[in-house]
Image 1 (cartoon, helix red, strand yellow):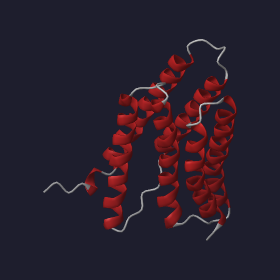
Image 2: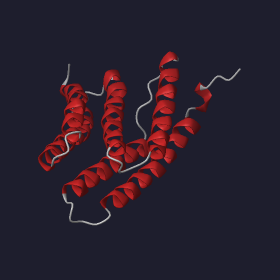
Image 3: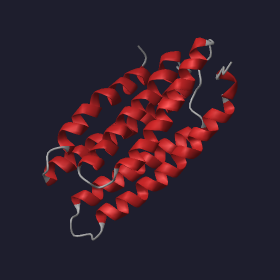
Length: 180
């Protein structure tokens, strides 16, 4: 297994660690959760750069990397929902997009194709990670007023880019949807 794929698997392993710390309602646990999330987010950036620079792009990486991203960001949004920072709607919209894109990827795989992440898909992931990091930082600084509102606004910005990237995936891969 190459280094980029190991970094992807590390991100998967870090997801339950992140959840464990974020569900403890103390400042130190939120700070540790933030650090774990940042490390996991950095593995996303590093695995792609290393894979392209060393010509280690693999079918496993094209499949597992977006899946690991979805696991990490979904975990964070569910934590935000559990803590009443955001409601169910943004999480629902994000999950619908993720299921749809995963379905498209499965349809492509059935046809022998692998769909790599697009620009908008990557941009969506980056905006999600930045808003999550900002939201956790805001949780750690209770002196800032309206932290839940600020985080919710950031999440809704992510929802916009999530929808944009989802529409792009469907439009580009409509031919894989055999409706007859």
